[in-house]
Amino acid sequence: MFGKLFDSLKTGLTKTRNALTDKINETLKLAVTIDEDLYEELEEILIMADIGMDTTMDIIERLKEKIRKEKINDVEMVQPALKEVIADMMSGKDEIVEESGKRVVLVIGVNGVGKTTSIGKLAAKNKQAGKKVLLAAADTFRAAAIDQLVVWSERAKVDIVKHEEGSDPAAVVFDAINASKARNVDLLICDTAGRLHNKKNLMDELGKINRIIEREYSDAKKETLLVLDATTGQNAVIQAKQFMEVCPVDGIVLTKLDGTAKGGVVISIKNSLNIPVKYIGVGEGIDDLQEFDAESFVEALF
Image 1 (cartoon, one colour):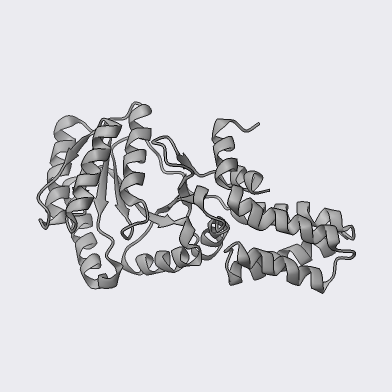
Image 2 (spheres, helix red, strand yellow; image 1 turned 180 degrees about the vertical axis):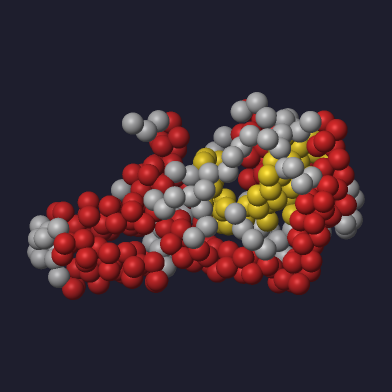
């Protein structure tokens, strides 16, 4: 039923599974009846896996309701019931972005979350799918960001538009749009800054970039992706909320899921932010950025 992508997801979620499912199973083995003590222990395990307080409470309430409704009294049936509750919670209908026609993807996120790497992998993924891709190095605040993106453009074998460090990010995007039109590019991916400590500047910068895209490239479908680091757990949720105050976010790219026991944050993001997780990073390789699939995620988690 599930293929190679599922295997890498399963491997990537090992630490989270150890922190979550294994502990749940241990707890259920020792439990004699389904009572408040058991619910409290499950609650603690969910919080430790960084599912977050509010989402955990929601899961436990739904689990209690399900157990009541279905008259479950066998402890062994608690784990499958919990899996169903989480699967239901994750399965809200996310809007699928129509990938035909011209597209512009703005990528935001603070330094160190794996933003540039994700852009490189996204470029490679689309290039392999036969799309013509162009990168715009509009995170001009750091020379390292530009250099890093150049390296990824070479690895993914796609073109890049860049200016000097410190130049106007909107000017880079303007040039990249013109290059996209001239070269008949399918997908333009813009790396943009994510200096959250200076929200006013960030808001102005992204506002200016968005106005230029609307004015110069109005026929392209625009999407803003926010890159978050799974290893930061609930801090990733807080960061997402701060970015959402600055600009609309269409989807989330969650990186470093393979290196963390905090993969439960995926459930928290879905439940508390109501923004779809579009891609997840489950490894270091250029092919390790996967389109997120809730069903596979819950399967791999359990």
